[in-house]
Length: 244
Image (cartoon, rainbow, N blue to C red; front, side, top):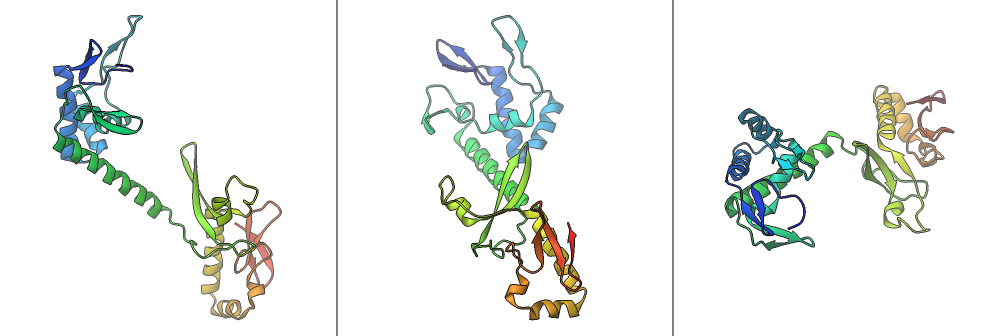
């Protein structure tokens, strides 16, 4: 067997055999997750109980491991099908030749709970930062702008992107705009607050022609891009432009 031997097993003649002491640690962690349903709570309890990672001795004689579990380590352990007697080969699960440490019921319950919690987390992220203008923006060609995001150094950045930049990505036909979501949303909110605080201004905006309500940059209702490409708020009563 190649790679590191997982916690709960030892290698013997190219096969995995159960390490009784470590196997109890693995079963305990699975039992804790079934009880709490939360990796953070599992880590807290594992730390309290003094549960530790596998100890390994390198060829140089240096000992590694034997430390408290990190949350990442716990996620990896709980989602490892090897503990259910399975192996992964080319993305597919197969029955392994090694003994399982947990029963099928426990494996299925933990797997399903992990998947459900991951889905809840993604929903919370989207709910915490909803795309307020989804379906309402178009670019200068009248093409709808679609909510999108990118993650850089662990930080999530939201955008509104022309549909062609998504559907025609990587081709010469990919043209359109990509706007920073927070900036344009704040600009629109500023316009709405300003309009709603003055009914006269709101009526004036509604009676304006479509061409008057759309700037040269394609932004609806009083938005303008300055020479740096940043959205600006246009006060049509006195034609002042205020940056966000």
